Structure formats: structure tokens, C-alpha cells
Length: 239
Image (cartoon, rainbow, N blue to C red; front, side):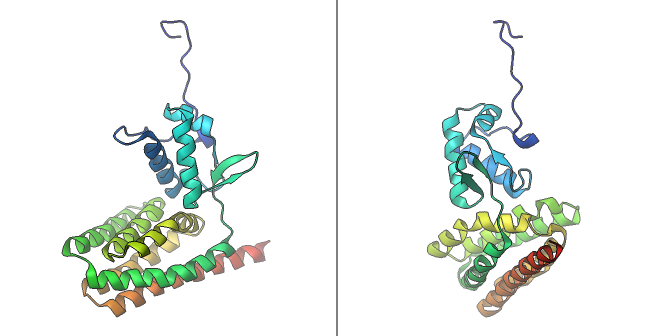
């Protein structure tokens, strides 16, 4: 009981997950969005988890309006879906929807790597190398659960180094579905492949070899697409 005689409520825990406190330096809706997005990418809110606006607002100690805005942004990103009478939840993607996405991504990520090899500044190359080192170090420490966010961070830096706003805009719009694809796969196996393949991309970009950079990036995405198709085939056989 508080001094005024009212009981103090324990913050709700949507889906049984305790989310971190919100930072205070941004708009509230941005804080909520960033926190939920990171929780989804790190697998703390797995596919299928409900995103209850009232419960999230209670946990974050904010009004419902910024939470509703943040959830709508997650829906726009492809990280969440909204169903009539059920509300929003973390997206569950059918693997057959991902193969066409990765066919397009192969071409665009290859272009991003080619352009990065041609246009990246020395500082951007350092940031790309840092992103790769951080990813490798996390996996060396057994932090495979961080694979999705660190994998996305490497590709995000590669796209920034391409200096192509239209390409950057398109690939950022599909990042939600890419994150869900990674989380729905085999993080242990995929992370080991990714580190080697990212190293090949990095080496080619550092060497300022556009053709090799494009080939390495396309080969990386091709492998993931093949793994998604194979994983889906295995599930179909199991059923």
C-alpha cells in the first residue's frame, strides 16, 4: 500500500518476458519501437508473441498512444502482423514467402557490396570491419543468440557504405522479414557460415574489388536462400 492507501501495481510482463526500461532521450513512441524491435530481433519476443498495447503500456509506464504507434511501425516493417479481433503479434513467416524475397535480396545485396567497394570512405570501411569483429567475437563467446542483430548490423553498415539512398531505403524496408527469417532458421549453423561469408565480402570491399565484393555478397545470400528452402523441405517431409 502507498501512503495514499492505494496498492502499487506490479508491471505486466507480456508473454512472460521482462523488457528493459525505456531510455528517456527520444520520443516515447521511438523508445518503445526501438525496444520492441530489438527484443524481436534478439529472439526475446519470438514469432507468434502477442503485442498487447494495454499490457505494453503498463509495463513501460507510458500511455497507450505511443505504444500503438510503435506497434504499427513494427507491422509496417514486417516484424509484426495484425489480425482482426486479435490485435498484433510478432510475425510468423511461411518459409515459402521468404524464397522470393531472398531472390531479390541477392541482387540488391550484391549491388550494395559492389558500390561499397567503389565508394566507401576509409572510416566506413573501419566501421564495417568493426561490425564483423564484434559479430565474430560474440560467437566466440558462445553468444549465438546475438547472431540476428549482429548479422543485420554488418549488412546495414555495408549498405550505408554503398552511398545509394534508394537501395538503402528498399533494403531497410525488408529488414524485418530478414530478421524473422534468421530467427526461424538455425542460428548455430547459420552464424558459422555467415562469419566466413561476411569475411569474404569484407576482404573484397577492403581490396576495392567491386566484382569480387558483389560475387561474395550474392553467394552469401544464395546460401541462406538455399538453407531456407532446405529447411522448409525438411519440415514438409516431417509433416
